[in-house]
Length: 497
Image (tube, rainbow, N blue to C red; front, side, top):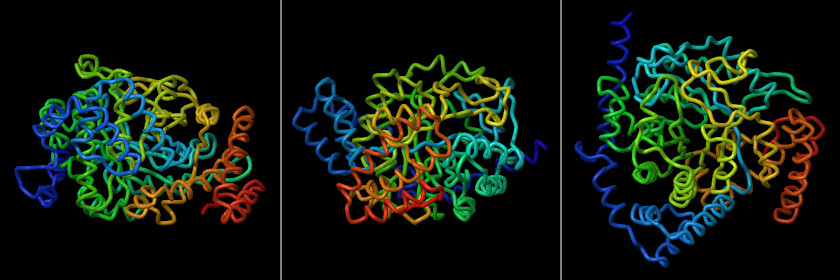
């Protein structure tokens, strides 16, 4: 068995699928020295220049490294207030007042890697590991789609032959096949995004053929020496470049939507923001589209993982605000994902800075949604400890009280509004108008099928306000929209523009 595992590991990385993207074999699009120099050189930029940079962001243009590093160096509280205000404006301009919700679903916790910060590292012998059977996948999905009301999932796999692309394909097909009777309709998962290991072009093509949503891979840290220190070199993940060019391979394989991210707390947060920017610029330059989403998880406690407590780069709450603000300004078209790693209070404070997606009802223990005995988190069963475990109903209600409409829409993916198409729509503001219509219809559906009476009461006020706005601002489509809305109110499901 050990020999088979070693053979599998030895055959994962294909060097020619790294070098094909390099203009010079000794250089990558991430240059540590250049990033540090940019951050240092753009300190002390005057107020007028910062305001010019903010204006560029408001025009939904990607910022340059010099412009972004200038924002990272701002010390003036007044300017930070202006930047935060602009971040909120950009989000509303591109995405309207919608927030998309999803749930994470861990399908395997076996992994061949030994990342110093991860509770699931292969040498952590206190963790209870496993791989869900297809029947267990079905049971978890039935809870998520039929009892909680999710329409989107992010499924998570460890890097291991037991959860290879064949397993991934079977689990995705299983999830899409689930249909559950609800209060007034039928619960289904309509979009499955994947958080998985870097794949070869051939295996990414298999994922594309199944019909996945976004394929999400985090570089964890863009800083080479830190990357080397936390990822042992004799592991798959120890190869910095195999991971760095994973999104290139995914896009070459036909996957339109890719998601990038960094784990904040491994190295200087300003460097990681710059790394994410350079990654976005590289994808724009080479493929004509940037990342569909950017995520920015913070280090959180994990069972038997002392590295986390000892990190000298832990990110405080004030710096987390800055990370989100600068990223929203630097890459204004992208979706931004805030996860339940953050506690409820922090999420409420951070969402107005430009967040477009957040999870809810989250459980990250293997099989945890279907385990009625597990009322609390079990550290030995999961990758890290969550900060916010509120139900989807509670999160939706709070968002409504904040003036947001929760969108359960997945129409864009099924109508071909992906890749370059959606990027163009986002930059022009047109996607926000499409999505407002679909957000109202799908929110109506969710309120009638899943909401508590308290959430429905608040949600009705949001719907009333949204319908009034659509009638005033989009009169040409209002009649068609309202017809779809009335059909949904009477029990029809999955209607969209």
